[in-house]
View 1 (cartoon, rainbow, N blue to C red):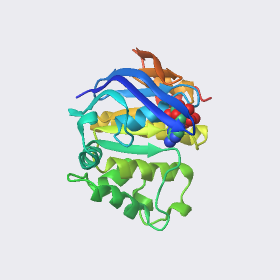
View 2 (cartoon, rainbow, N blue to C red):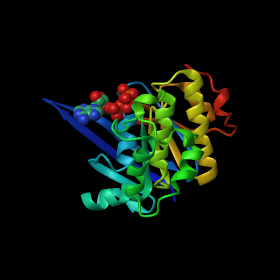
View 3 (cartoon, rainbow, N blue to C red):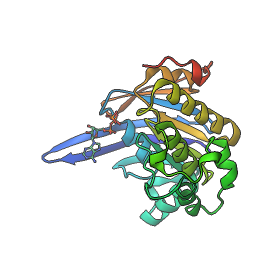
View 4 (cartoon, rainbow, N blue to C red):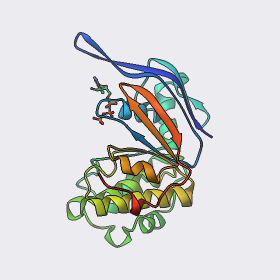
Length: 233
Ligand SMILES: Nc1ncnc2c1ncn2[C@@H]1O[C@H](COP(=O)(O)OP(=O)(O)OP(=O)(O)O)[C@@H](O)[C@H]1O
């Protein structure tokens, strides 16, 4: 099942001014791809990811994800859609500080009707030895691993990542990208990555560029490179 975004428009009202965050955005992403979304600040990247993931509504156009037409779903149906299909990863890991690693991942598990195995997921993200630690006892890269585990345990078809390496140094950032690639290869998860780091486009199957709310470019990268080899900017 593909993601199909057709002529999507979204405006935000800011005081007296309308901000056109998405303008006739049109895009198709086949399953199992790694996609990077590049573009300057304010170009609509997060808005695009949020409407695809059903956490933001849009004004006009159609979005089909996993066979659901999002513009037709009621709020409760959108919640169900997100639970069954979408994992979100953010730059700030958004872990619950009073819960351990395992308990944080448990939060994702409780949201799913068909969760994956906890120990297996912790092992896949390399956090099996730290399952009883609290977020403050972890490095940024480790916290992002936990956030990825929390998203993954739901076994989502789509992992939507908004600047997942934005708060990390090069070495740690590349390890997180390797983990995302690994997840894509073993579970077939489609991974969308927003980034300011142009080099990350080189590891993707598809690169999308945005400017002023428009998707100005979408091209296939025939020869994705290993995450460790991306140029860090
Ligand atoms: N909740 C909101 N209310 C009003 N305007 C908003 C809101 N969210 C986003 N915008 C505006 O919509 C436009 C697109 O924002 P968006 O966050 O999608 O861009 P972005 O490309 O992700 O930017 P960045 O790289 O800085 O995160 C911007 O002009 C932004 O100021």
